[in-house]
Image (cartoon, rainbow, N blue to C red; front, top):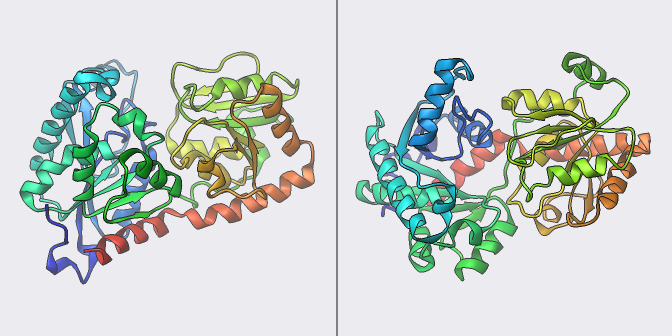
Length: 395
């Protein structure tokens, strides 16, 4: 595979044509999915590159989306970047990760991505794959066309997602890439622990958010616009409604106190409900900022994470955060804006952590100020420039 960028582009990386391959990207049906990838691609485009997106998507989801649009259950969302769908017959989410069917599923996805890259109007100078699985799907096309391939790896667990893959072959493919970006030192260490060594060319590129969109707003005004109670103490949760993220653990903590309510933004099987839930569901990413601004504190007791964008978005909105006392959070968060709790503790422990923030208005104000100042270092524009600079200097 080509390791370097075309010589004509080495002096000015802003001329690059980049194709992003990501199965985690918003669609008309799943508009909440992978908005952090979309926002980053837009930031790279604003840095001067021409960016297009290849979205591996199951045929089942494609038909579901068409049906939802036809019957009016979904509306078409604005397409911010040129995109091509790579349809493939998925053998189910379980097969994608485990057992012999997982190998077949990956082969089907690779063929779909190969065809989709061929359908791009202009051949890219660089392919950026988000998550290792998409790098595997793009590897053959990039090798045949001598196009450098980079990957951003932010998996919460390599063992869970790549248990059925041949680790030796996968490690060899990853090591041949132009560059591997890990979203945290925790991710890089987890990769080394699972595969036995690090890629030859790798670095840490922390996640980032749009700090212009996600910013503090007058809380009373935000609550009035959204129809939320003005005097309630409101806790925000953003993430998939699954056990690893812990929405029901947050709900149980809210039920420990009479004056706590929750806003749960996400989707999944563990959907919170009851009198303490003011909202539970999905929304476009730009709407999330308004809901966060209307809340008092953010809670995400995850068991595992790569580097949570949701936490950084909450910090950018000036919210103190209550998060898991695990290395993936300790690595970058500070105690002046975060409270760390054992995600496996009883609901009482999580409730006490939330109460510790809300019971003191002075502490809440100080943590809110520190949260915003801390989040400003994670701007999308700075991340895009660093990404392009590393790609350029490692050519």
